[in-house]
Structure formats: structure tokens, C-alpha cells
Image 1 (cartoon, rainbow, N blue to C red):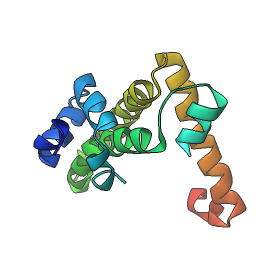
Image 2: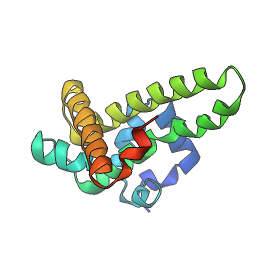
Image 3: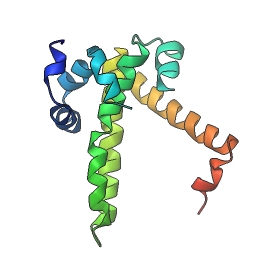
Image 4: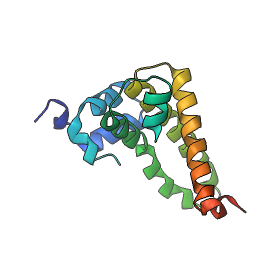
Length: 136
């Protein structure tokens, strides 16, 4: 067991939700965390020259999604919309920190990687017939 494997998934989720850089570094290096976390790699590592393995990036991005569990509070009348917006912003920031830490490059490159990754997903959704999800 590695030194990183001693922290529970809940502790890691809390650290990721609190935008704790050390938590992202921890899951980046803990190969055991890959199973805990579920295209950015191609953009960040191959296109923009970041340095990470597929597993390192997958783990950090996976844990960056931890604040998403709070979306359950989005069902609260009146406050639900505010909760969803706050959580989405929180997820965006956590994702950018995760990308930056895993790929070992600047925040600017992390933002570009996140945006290009999002655009790639949108284009793939449209090409695969999933564009109907984006229509009102």
C-alpha cells in the first residue's frame, strides 16, 4: 500500500471540493485512485505539452467532480437554481486546478485545455446525434 492509499475517498472528495492543491497532487500520484475516479489528456498532454500519464489526469479530474454531489440540493424550490450555478462554477474551478496540477503547467494552459476539451465534447455530441440535448 502506498502512502497515498491511506486517505479515504471521502477525505479526498473533501480535499478536492475545498480546491486543496495537495489533494490533487496526492491522487495524481496514487495509481490506486484510478478506480475511484472515473480526452482532456490528448489536448493537455499531447497538444499543449503537459506532462502527465492518462491515469494521473483521470484521477485528478475525477476527484475534481466531488462538489457535484451537492447538486442534490438543486431540487430545493427557489434556491435550487442558485445552488446549481454555484456548484457548476465550483466544478469548473476544481477541474481547472486538477488539469493544472496533473499536467504540470500554467493556469492559463489549464483553462485553454478545459475549454478545448469542452468544445470537443460538444462537437462529438452533435456528430453522434446527441445535439438534441443542447436544444431547448
